[in-house]
Each structure stands twice: as structure tokens, then as C-alpha cells.
View 1 (cartoon, rainbow, N blue to C red):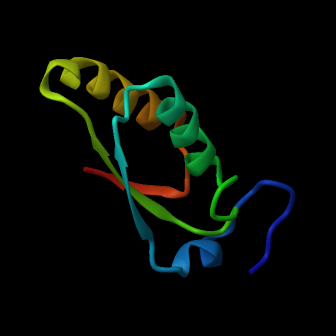
View 2: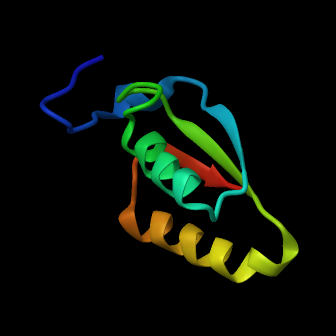
Amino acid sequence: MMTMGNRLFPGDLKKTPIHITICGATCPCSYCLLFMIAQGKMFGKHQPVTLTLMDVENRIQRLKGIVMELEDSSFPLVTDFK
């Protein structure tokens, strides 16, 4: 794997993504955790992830907002949201 600083090269994402489920994804602790995972601070800068976000029904709009934030940030390690 070849990296230059935080920049990823095509060969870096050949790893199989790990699937992570976050329950209560709209709470402040989970919100911080999501961005740490997306930045590669939790599982490494070369480990792609698929995020499954869960919360109670009355917080679905907040959850959609968090997904939009993550999508807008274009984290290269996040391969999919569920």
C-alpha cells in the first residue's frame, strides 16, 4: 500500500470493507464516533467501512441529516450507508 500523507491511492481500497452498525446514531457520542470511523481513526487509514445507522423512529429525520453530512464530506473509506 502506498500513501502520501492522508492521500489514498487506488490500491489502498482493495481491502474488503468491514460492516459497522451504530445503534442510537443520532446521540452526540455516536455522532462523534461516526466521523472518527469515517476518517480512519478507529480501524486505520486503509480500512474501508460500510456503515449501518440505526435509531428510534422519531429521530429518522436527524438520521437522514447525519447521512447527508457524511455523504457531503466524501470520506473515501466509507463505501456504503444502510
